[in-house]
Length: 109
Length: 119
Image 1 (cartoon, helix red, strand yellow):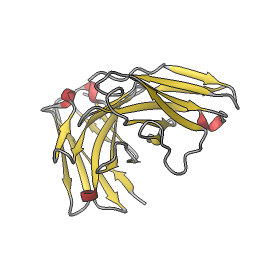
Image 2 (cartoon, rainbow over the protein chains, first blue to last red):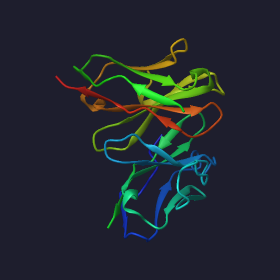
Image 3 (cartoon, rainbow over the protein chains, first blue to last red):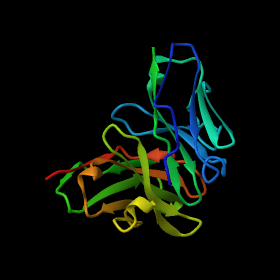
Image 4 (cartoon, rainbow over the protein chains, first blue to last red):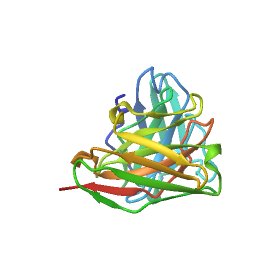
């Protein structure tokens, strides 16, 4: 099972919006509506930000949103804030297995 | 509130085995599905395996088949991940990650355990 494809890095200024893509195949992203996104700050454990493609756990700001089209899922962060600077990983269910993306480093300029 | 507390850092020689533990509090393991994810230095997250409630068995990523064993002690709500035949490429932070049985997301994560493989 190959890792999902994410851009290595994205950046944006405070207040702007950024979108991170996550491309898989019909066996994972395209085959299930079970894409989740995790935020990871340096030296910390990942934190769930989006699940089931577009749902937000309680406590996650509504600035974070998710979507999917075909084999590509996306995470959009609007109204960027300094604390959003982190690594972001997508993850997809793949039928009893799971696959993560390679990760995207978000820099807030 | 579910909390996961993992065992401490380990240093192992190539060829040895390591066993990492993950203690669950705030809920019982029987209601949850435990998985293990690792992260090599400067690299991304990699799913290693976990309990599949639909099959009723633990599923391992093909890459680790034959080298990893994941077990649970429901009397203490502690999960274990044992990785054998260690090599330098296994140097990583190992996370336990918990999900509700029927969900498809990892809601809770341990703090991570650094395993260093070095001669």
